[in-house]
Image (cartoon, rainbow, N blue to C red; front, side, top):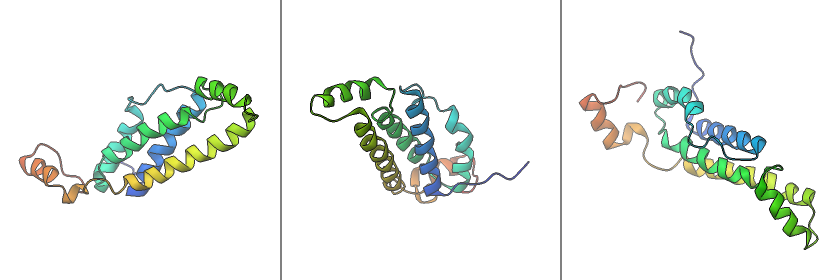
Length: 140
C-alpha cells in the first residue's frame, strides 16, 4: 500500500476549509456541506495523525456558508450588489472586498479551530473507547 501524505493538524483544517470554500464559491450555492464523501478519504489520515475529525469538519461547514457571500454568481451577492448600487458601490468593488475578506476570515477561523477540544491522545472519552475496543488504534 502506498504511503499517504499525512496532513498535520493545521494543514488538515486549512485543506478542509479551502476545499469546501472553493467548491461553494465556484458553484454559487451550497450543495455539499453535509456531504462527507470529500472528507471520508481524509478521515483515516486524520485519525492516524491524532487529529480530531470535528476540527476540519467544523471549519469546512463554516467555510461553505461564508463562500456563498463571496461567490460572484450567488443570489446573495447579486441581491446585495443591487442594494449597494443605490449607495454608489459597484459590483466589482463589492467582489474586491467580499472575496479576499471571506477567504482570510475562513483561514483565521481554521487556525482557531485547531485549538478546540483536546487532542485525541489526551481525550479521556477517546481513550475510554479505545480501551473498550470501540475504536481502532491507529496513530493515537
